[in-house]
Length: 356
Ligand code: HBI
Image (cartoon, rainbow, N blue to C red):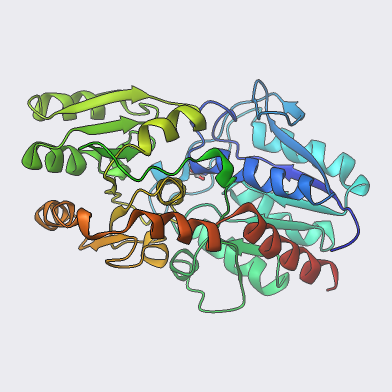
């Protein structure tokens, strides 16, 4: 793509960028912004007030945060708080839309999807999680039909939860791999990373740490304090260490010295950024065979896929970690998940959208 585009990113309304509360979306937005800026595009990011994103300037919008979709039941209606930051986002976007070539929405919310046809082909979406509610499924399906090409997913497994087999864009993700240092000789320890909340199944990783006697380093914000306290009480003997929510640099310093990363999610993980962060450091990934990680991890080559929720299989996989060549893990991250690879996928998507 030889012409610099004027791009407007609209963040998720569930938390502040820089706080850890937006999960993988924070890093995704940063990676998208970085690679597109590198390629000569101009990126402006709309986000909730008090957000921070490295060297990017943000348009900060006040208002009440949105409730996370994963806390809703399947038949729940759309919920809109008074003075919603989401509504304030889109009032702003509507006023400035003329100044941009494309508007990329990162929110997993009904309102921006519903607005798609009103933006005359300029509004596109990256869907960040799998299917959760009927009302979201319907609007995603409607938009796919009315505005072909306007929806991108991270993985095929994720798209399938909405009932799609084709006709969508699969972007995976990409990372600034220079920020992750390869480590060939780890210590005898394991890693677990993510928001600490029930849908992440941390207790299974803690059980595996206790059973194998291998220390577990836990990194991420404690989003559900009660859930965390329960884990500590139930597994008081487990050799675990909580390191908090770390910067990418601090995170990779700990992560790279681990023998493996455990992914024990109970929900359909749409992608799983942490898997690629691990591979980038040469750390093999053991994951439940659920969602995105099933498309990334090469069985027995860059990690192991385990029957979901089967803690005995999880423990057996840990015992096979030494069969993995750590340099192959790094290589996989470089070929499939570099910023350059992501940039190519994004620009291909944009070219397709702009020529429609
Ligand atoms: N829920 N309502 C809503 N909006 C989002 O943008 C959203 C969400 N839940 C989870 C989510 N985004 C993810 O991307 C997580 O990484 C936080």
